[in-house]
Length: 435
Image 1 (cartoon, rainbow, N blue to C red):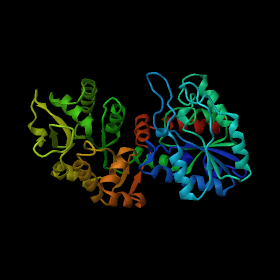
Image 2: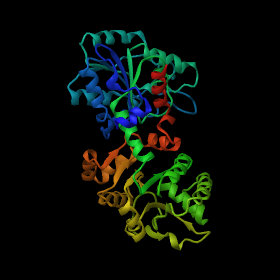
Image 3: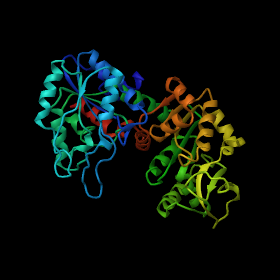
Image 4: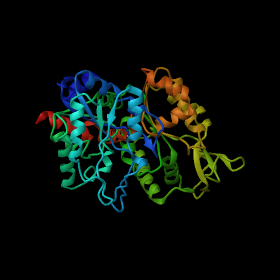
């Protein structure tokens, strides 16, 4: 890991002088849905960074985004319990036996918070006097400047920087170029936290994999994945698709119709089919799919297995909601997965929560290959592994043969860019040390 990070010349937390410094830490604790934490994995993954800062005498101010409180059409920002960071504060206080305080700011006419208010100063004074253990700012997306494309973003970043002496980015999953992830690094000495370092080091196992290298990717929209799929086709020995993007691919390649697949996705898939033709033998088609008459559940008599080999141009299928487990028992697929040395997975194969068998079969097959390194993307991939195979999930957390990224979207973006420096927050850290 050290060699990879040294090669990047990235400023590392362990090289910072933290004693008696106020340290602003951007984390990706985006784990709250409607006020409930469903999996604290991304919170727990940052505790090493927080403990280190505290042990070295630093005073911590935390910040994260949570959900999407901004209406993209109207620009209004809704401040509500659904996107509050309070459950995260409660979790950390109970787990670490510490006291965290969140400042109270005044929202402005459906525009969220216009900036950092001076009322936070008394909390910073309490922090410096050891009367509290840390400060957790409100959801960064509650601030008008966080996602702004105007000078408001710089103003907000400057205000954030004014709270602290040092900035630490430990939010690999938050790869968007926002005020709290990129712009604040212009104003403070900035460092990569330990989670950020681990994620970057494990990305190198995708950039320079031990071969054969298999990538498995699923998703609901082809347009958000096509650039990553093109990049993966180039670097992988084999690529396997699942979910709606596999359905769109089948429509594009075989000239069929599948209920619920939008024409826009099919058009993107057609471009991908043409691109994939330049890499013969790399794209592995899972041979058996599950057709359902309804999306309301896996109802007896209303679903059936269809074979890809039997598809004819002009066929019209109902919803395709899973890959049948028998796909992973076919001789060709078994051979490819059993011989792999590196497997990257950012995929839920079926329509949750009803169609689970394809995802279970995939994860169990991957686990049988005890020699391969298995790299799992975050988000839904991680959630479904935990829900469907909790025993395997627990093993994977501690196994040297597994690594679970905290941000699946960030991994795909990094793959698409071809280099970790294509991620704007990482580039911002590097630029901060070069000034």
